[in-house]
Structure formats: C-alpha cells, structure tokens
Image (cartoon, rainbow, N blue to C red):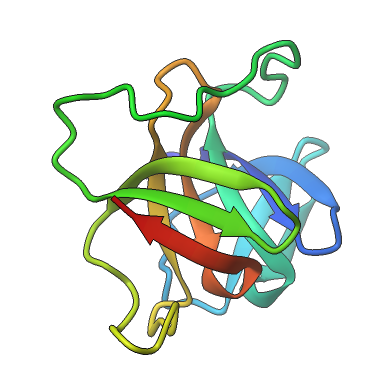
Length: 138
C-alpha cells in the first residue's frame, strides 16, 4: 500500500506531519516519515489522534462545519470530545469500539472517524481512546 499523508497530534500539543504505511490499531506504535524524510517510531499512547489529510497546508481560514451534512452515510453518527476541548463530529468507521457499561474501554486502543464535513482537509482520523473525555452517539 502507498504511504498515506498524515498529521500526528500529540497529547502534549506537538504536531508531526508526514507519511505512514499500513497501520493496524492493534499495534502499539506507528512508523512515520516526516517532511524532512526522517523516520521515527511513535508510541500510540503519546498521541491524541492520527489525522489522514488531503494536504499538509490545509486552509487556515476554513472552519469545519459542526453538523451532519451527508445523508447517505450508513455509519453511526458520533461527536467526539477530546480532553483538550476539541470536538470532532463525524461517522464511526466500523463497529462500536467500546463496551456498554465500560465507556471507551477498547481492545483496539482507538477508533476511526470520518468527518461529516466533505470540505474539511481531514479524510479520516484514528482517535486514541485515552485522549477522549466522551463520545455522543446520535
């Protein structure tokens, strides 16, 4: 598989832009090649999320729509609230990754979300469960 363009957002606020190959949520780390072509292994527990992006630049003047704009999406609609206050609204990719009664207890360590806004720079994101305060399902 070709390398995918990503922005790694760390719990401490650090950001790394680069490329990753195949990624399994069961892994404890990912290998990223940054913009300067330096390869590094990053532990998943250091991350807030992995954002798969269209471009590294994005559009600083664009504000993501915080509503569900797609009507054909069959996935579960969710709102993710991160511990740092950021919110992400979108569609859960795959099965519900947490068990009822054990909020956000996940065997995989996280889950994929597809943003509801088609115009955003994000294609999808892998959210690390420990970086989230709660998830609301609609």
